[in-house]
Image (cartoon, rainbow, N blue to C red; front, side):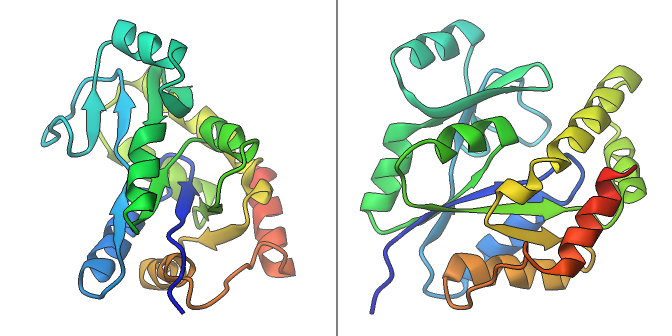
Length: 210
């Protein structure tokens, strides 16, 4: 029986390895018959080195973004690290109607907006193996000043407190294992819901205690 295409909301604090895991899952899907794509969001931030319009994001001005928001163009939108991000309703609907599963990298703010809507989705939160590893990854990016790094760290720790609201939690300790778990959820072959296990609960509690 063919499964209905679904929207997968994937969140994680900055530095948890979310983008790398998603890239690995997209590569695996490309080698199989799984119709899977990454949702392309709109943003007001400037393109980084190697990014191009329409590939990673649709880069638009703040005025253009706010005009779209006022016309109900976005399924969800959020301000992250001083920049605006939003997901087009039309983009998501067109992909799902075409039979394509869609991954949406989403901030906690955006997730909570979609969580209030009547839409078929599954939510996944990626946890870092430790707070110290999170700090190292954020600092290693090298593309932000000290003030921006501190803001990312504060936001990352704040976002961890919302992890329990998601249907699935994956700890990115072993990259290969975490990528396999993410693929299992998205391929809808193995029902994986480990957020209720005592191990994950205790681990999340330890992260939040720092």
